[in-house]
Image (tube, rainbow, N blue to C red):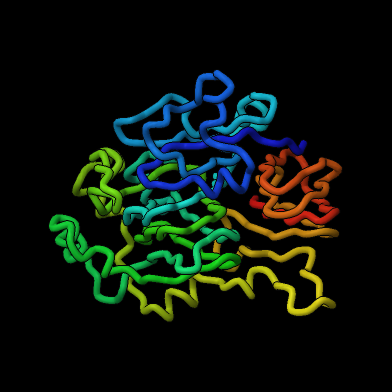
Length: 337
């Protein structure tokens, strides 16, 4: 089965979402114009689209039952049709820097959050990412729990303890569980992660002035235990980039002259970094053998067919019980499994 998905916008504390509207040709407010009740109220920004999600969102004290759960184009919940997905895939658009945060490893998630999964994640940057975009990733050498906690309590100097890494469309960044990070303003990306919304947050106020609820900051584990989520292993800038960053030329071969073609299949993420999930870029004539019988895909450019289903730029797809994908026509697809 391959099926198209409804928009599934989710509230977050940071500003953004316009690039998602432009990319998909829709709007997070489109249901208001038809007189339907929106899935979530709009008093908070909705800068993310959770594709095919079977994971509920956590917003501290601002919970809405079922927020985050994806639906097929016909309105049925994804989880009711294909069961629980082992991944969570999002479109994410940031108009401001996100607050510094970290997500648990699997052992930490089991110990502190009573969860069988953590939240290792990765980012693939799409066209529309701003020329000056960046992310902040990983501790610099010499950061200890004591120093990090002191900076947290003072709410001063936190960002200086992380590496600032410029990014552009086609770049890829991997984020291990436990790594502190912050997505900068102007980033438009596909985020692939373990299926959870577990996190701890190091900043009390967003750059635009929104106060983060306490429960969102410590993730429900308490102020002291939240510092157990971070992995206090610092690396140099060069070490961090070599291990976790893949530049555009490595993730998708661009056209260099009129005679060259982009390879029909490029594996962006494979087992060299993680066994939790994988990512491919597939173009006309590409075929992918999926390692799982569940996958999520987004059409990033053009129009064509995926296993005989007509698709176009901005379509989001859920794939179940199919282990081979065949892409034809002038279409580019990012596949996550």
